[in-house]
Each structure stands twice: as C-alpha cells, then as structure tokens.
Image (cartoon, rainbow, N blue to C red; front, side, top):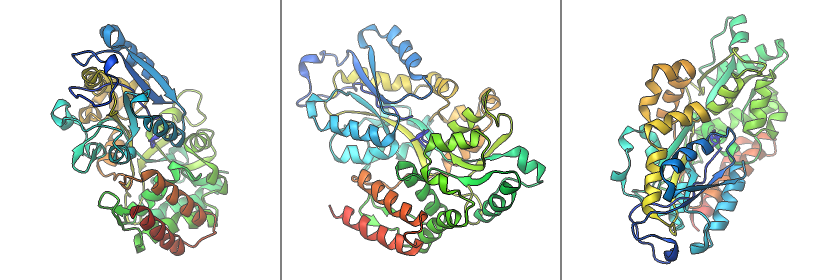
Length: 423
C-alpha cells in the first residue's frame, strides 16, 4: 500500500526482467543469450517524484539495461485492474517486473503471472523480518520486499499538551479524547480511510486484528472472521460514526483526503501511513511542528497495524531475466533504500536504517514505525484477494452507515468469504 500503502499511499509496478530463468513462450526474440537487456518498469503514480532520479542512476551505469518507467493510476484498485488486464495477455504483456502491493503476491503467484525467485540471490536477512512473509506464497518466494509500511496514529501534540493529556494508547482513551477534546478546539475527532476501497479493507482489518481476531487463515482456505473480536473491532468503528466522533465526512476519505483534513487543521486524530506525517510536517502545512505519531491504539493497549508496502515481482514472460535480478538488487540495496526514505518519504525494508541516528533526527517517527512494522500483520492472504477485499469493503461500509449491525455484518462477511474460498 498506500504509503499506499498504507499506507501504503504510491505503489510501483516495475516492469523488469529477472535472473537466470528460461521461460517457455517468452519473447525470445527480444532476449539476449546472457539474460541481459532493456527493461520496462511500470508504477502506480509516483506521488513524490522520487523514482525517476533513482532509475536515472541505474540507467547511467547500465547503458545496455536501461529501464523505461510506466506510471499507472494513483489508486491501488485502478492499478490492480490495469495490471491484471495486461498480465492476462500472457507473452503479449508490456510489463517485465511488477512492484505490487504486498497483498497481491498470493493472487499473482496463484494465477501464474509471476515466477518464484531464488531466496539466496537477495539479502533477505537484512530486512525487517515481517516484510519477507508478504513476498511468499505456498512456502516459496515470489517477490522481493521493496518498501514497507504500517499505519500510525497521528495527533495534534500542541492540543494534547494544552489539555495535559498523553497520546491515546487504548480505544477508550481515543474515543474519550475525540468526543471531549476535539469539539473544544473546533475539530473533528478521529478519521481513517473509510471510503469503500482498499483503504477501508485495511482499516477494518486493523480493527479486527487489534481486538485479537482474524479474517482468513490457511492461505485463504479457512474463514475465521465470525468471532467476538471481529464484532468488537467493527463495532468500534461503527459506534464512532454513529456517535459522531468519527465524522460522517470521513466515509468519503481515502489517504489523500484524510491527510488533507489533518494537514489543514480539521482533525485531532488520524490513522494514516507515515507519508502523511512527513507531508503534514513540511513547510506550508498548517500543522507543521505541531504533530506527533504513536502506534495505533487497541482495546487494552497498542493495537495491530496492517503491514503495507510493495514487493518487486518478475512476470512469467519477462525478458532479460538477469537484468531484472540485478535491478531488484539495486533497488533493495542499502544506498538506494536510504534514498527511498529521504527522497520518497517511503519506509525502507532494510532494518539497519531505522537505527541510523541521522535518519532518526530527520524522520523522528522511525522508531515508532519500526515498532509498528515489527508487530504488524498482513492483510488476509488469498489467491482471490481482490474479491475478498471487495466483500470486506462492502460489508464494513454497510456497518459504518448503520445499514447492518456489527453482529450481522460479521455473519454476512463469514458467509460471503466462505463462498469465495470454495471457488
């Protein structure tokens, strides 16, 4: 995700080629004998404009393996739709390497659109441990983590300081402060990303996970959502909308709309990806210098974030596989990963960067983010993830708008997810 991206908020589709594989039906007339040559890299809209300079560095030093960047829409849902449409074209696909949302790995691997990768070719032991799991399916590595993400609770530290209140650690504290402190200062209480799209799936999963529940198990073969924890998590969000400390306008928010509301000084608390902290802290922001970030709250203490970010995967019909592997190694190397953070405001996968004193001074949320990533959980894995997400969005939105009780919403979720898992 956003960080979509959860945040993330901008996802890459990198069309590139990967190492040492002979692919039946690939564009053999375009492949060199040594597996090297030009690449195509597709990406969801690069919101911070950092990727072009990174690729310029590669192109200057690899003139025979130049990368062409293709930007797809900013929206994860639209990027997914364009990517899958292209991949169904088989050897006519434009793309060689995909930088996919972490939760598409299972779907793309099960469909045969991306190929398994040799774990020993990449420095996986230097990555934050949870991110590697997002790149696997059925026990095999199908992608390489590129950026990670975890949701944070952003808050107005100036207002909480004025009220002599610490940032909330529990749902009860968040609810109390959103109800009582926000109105005193003419603010809305709390918002996340509650429009029916992928962001709502993330917010709903975080609420369920934080309450101790799950949605699916066994690579999507078991439905586990029908639980008291799921009712509690969805009920927490639905109650917020019903009681008004989550404003109804938040039902129209995606990452950018919610970030803008916070940045413009209209919100006391916001769940978003770390990029929102970076942007809201920049010169020109109405709240620059007046915000803080803590882990997401849960019922009895810190909650559980959904693990966001993106992974680099190689398409089944990729050209020049060795060049693809070399590019992936370049983009996941420590020097470039540092630039992913400093130029793109995207969380790197390299663990050592989170302890770098200079980076922590520049990005003070890094220790909080590291803790959130290490305790985060992936969205439910499924080869039918796009259908799973659509069901979660639709059902949870009905609960937030009062069309379903949390209990009936959870039962409906269980029925509809069970139908998907049988396909």
